Image 1 (cartoon, rainbow, N blue to C red):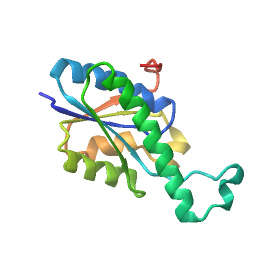
Image 2 (tube, one colour):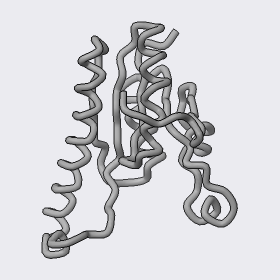
Image 3 (cartoon, rainbow, N blue to C red):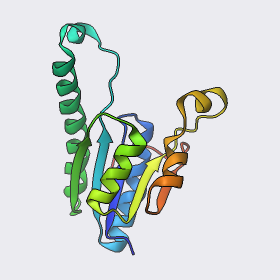
Image 4 (cartoon, rainbow, N blue to C red):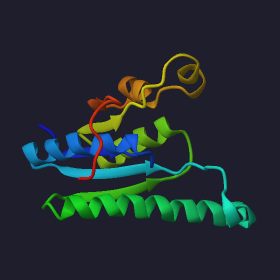
Length: 150
């Protein structure tokens, strides 16, 4: 039985495919949903290049928190219990594992970006690594899962 469902989102449209199965699990088991995203730098755009590294990372963290809060509010409006966390910059797999332990998650839901070949070798597969190291069951949503507004 799942009481705490953690959903890993990376800010990409593809990652949102993990929300629908997590919502279904939360409804079926009356579980809490915990939306998380690991801080990650992206190439500065526009005037962002003028910010100090600290200011830039603070701005990114605020953007990620806003992203998670927006989805949390939609789920809360449906009567679901939802929390959010922006995890510190670092290895995505390590940060997710730490949050699974901290939150005491019963299930991790994340989307597979469907990388193969060279890009998988170079970029790795977070979904594959979490399947091996999560410490709780992992639901990997395939990339071809329907993505849409919730």
